[in-house]
Image 1 (spheres, rainbow, N blue to C red):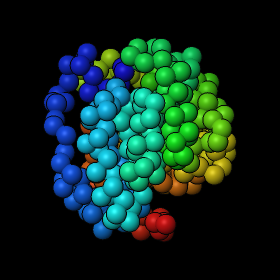
Image 2: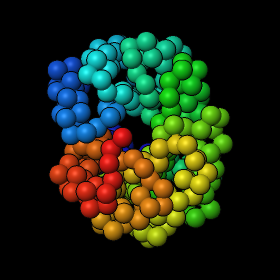
Image 3: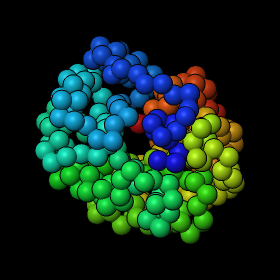
Image 4: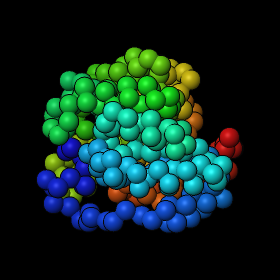
Length: 257
């Protein structure tokens, strides 16, 4: 993927890391819950999990669920039967993004087809899991292509329960490093259109939020965003400091559910 510092095809500063232990994951989940999080997302940089890899995650899901948190996972493309295993372990949500509009997709991603993503979303729904599915803006796409992404999300039946909207974080060594930055008003408009077309979904500010001024985040909330990713990292890119998030929420009079 042209935006991804994890790709073996790009020379970036991101290094391979071993899978976290169950205890490390559970400790992180406890910390998240103590800081007000209601859902805990676990991710791995796989194209898709092998069955042996998936087995290692099931205990993590079970133990995080036992803390009273909603559980979410993002492990890539799923094979038949894998979504059911995650559901049986206690998973609530599965994240798998469409990334961009169909007519922009091939410019950004060459390792999997759009239909592959839709097939995984079908497996997730078939297993009775809730869907977390969104995309990235700032990929040198047109306004019409941003609208095309939202249209695809709105036409999923049923619509995703959670829709993360990412603003591209440019990483040195990736093909999209140096892409023209999206004007902040276009990002806020994208949030507004997502809210109008996905009225029951959580519209979630995701990657790129650390680079957003407080005023821009405030306008996103006014435009319809009603969720954020909370924590120190989104796979490989940083996230705003927890204390900074608390201070912003207090300024805006926003309270967690």
